[in-house]
Length: 182
Ligand SMILES: O=P(O)(O)OC[C@H]1O[C@H](O)[C@H](O)[C@@H](O)[C@@H]1O
Image (cartoon, rainbow, N blue to C red; front, side, top):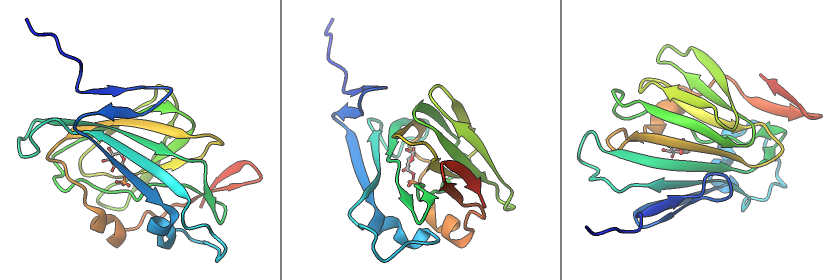
């Protein structure tokens, strides 16, 4: 029997996902600036807001295959607003997803197709079921890095346009250490 090294390794608490078939992406403030309510002119647009790692080993055309991912969000504020991901709904809304908290403190915002909005607290060990019809966005509300893992079908896809057409009606600010949802 041939015994092989794994194709990828997820260093759950101390690191990220590395290996073959691992894709990485970086979102800087310049990619997100238009989404914030009160971005000042003095903002450093090079600031890294979040990184995404995904282990995509399966044939992307084969329904039933899975991806495994990690989002690393820095404790950045923009005009007092907490760092958030772009947010998306799945292009194939029959595909659900599971998020799980690995480190830090955050919120997972949800919005259904009727505009109903709610949130779940994210922390180490928290599990979050995301129905394929629900738009979802992570917010780092803590003072440290927020790390969130994910597992989703390869055929889910990302529909960002839906979220641009139906913006989340809630924004999360941190004022004097207190989290305020407006
Ligand atoms: O794509 P965003 O809305 O910016 O979210 C960032 C990332 O969050 C999670 O890691 C998801 O599994 C990824 O599919 C998504 O790309």
